[in-house]
Amino acid sequence: MGKASRILSSSQIIFLGFALVILLGSLALTLPVCSDSGEHTPFLDALFTATSAVCVTGLVVRDTALYWSPIGQAVILALIQIGGMGVVTVAVAFFTASGRRISLKQRSTMQEAISAHQMGGIVRLTGFIIRMTLVFELIGALCLFPAMAGKFGPVHGMLAALFTSVSAFCNAGFDLMGSFAPYSSLTHFVDDPSVNLTVCALIAIGGIGFMTWDDVRAHGLRIRRYRMQSKVILLTTALLIIIPAAYFFFFEFAGLPAKTRVLASLFQSVTPRTAGFNTVDLTAMSDTGQMVIIALMLIGGSPGSTAGGMKTTTFAVMLCTAFSVFGRREHSQFFGRRVAHETVRSACAILMLYLTLFLAGGMLISRAENLPLLTCLFESASAVGTVGLTLGITPQLGSLSRIVLIALMFIGRVGGLTLIFAATKQKPARSALLPLEKLTVG
Image (cartoon, rainbow, N blue to C red; front, side, top):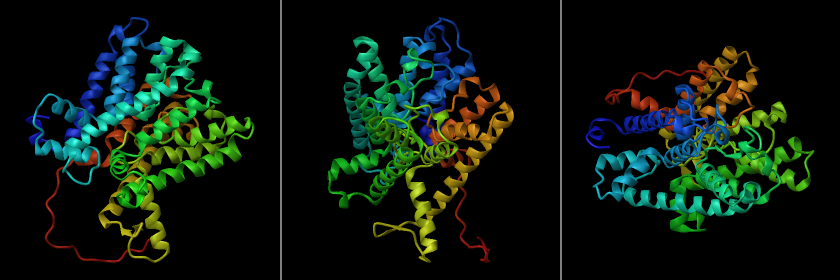
């Protein structure tokens, strides 16, 4: 972020920052020292893994615990941490720690990266984000340690607890549970309250967004003083946890014991936005249950968070706009505040972009692999939502399908609009309006 930051736009800096970290991570993972067998890893496999880690997705073509060496796992964990906090956030924190002055352009890029409403205090906010991230991850590791130590022993348990905590907080979905069974995720902890509740809490806290943290820090439980965005995020997040959990409890996991049924329902309603862990066999769920998870994966977390997806605020704005049309109201509104027309336009564009990527990716994979369309749509939703859940087809996919998923993961984490803005020049505003003519819709 030196001379180049004066030439490149903020969107281009974010795009190139993520791309550079993915490339460096890919090259590192190809080294023999990073694989447990001591052999070179094929570049496409390394690229897929690095993209999944930096884009905090969790889709893997090699089991993290069985294939990668401790050094390889450390590289993956570092990529998850950088991707979760954001490349720009980490860069600004590094510059601040080294005593370098943060330029106005760098502050502007940081503002865009974390979806802050103003540039003032952005460096202070960066320090707050770094500190709270480390605190939450450490607390999560301590809470997970007893259960992990009981399964792996104290040393391996400590490493597994730390890895799982960072992965959960960053909404990544990577795990070291392959020693039980390859790609088993957290299925061996389905009835363990400490693991389920801790991981759910880490996912939710990481996914509500850094600006919501700032409101909580500044105002505590006085929710009336929160920004409208924070109120919308908290309400939407709560509803997207409670309603799917109720569906899963009554219709998907009826055969489980009562306590396990509650934990499994809660966990599977939280993890699709956008962590990628699972405690039950997703292939055993009904088509309806899988479609519910697909919808949650596409919605994702909140702006300026460790999560991906089209974001809870986009979903809320589109839902509110629909009700405004149904009620013949001129403007969308939340909590007595009007939503800007530009926000509604952006939400429409994001929704259209994600639906297009989701459908195109799923159909392309289905055609290339000759697999059921729903299974492939599940995979593409997981990739573009940077979730990491799968119905078990990821390791068997061919090169074309893996490239499709890599592209979807990258777009899903960087952001569709950021990618488009990075690739196009801003056009000068028109001084005159074009003639208006009505168009019937619906």
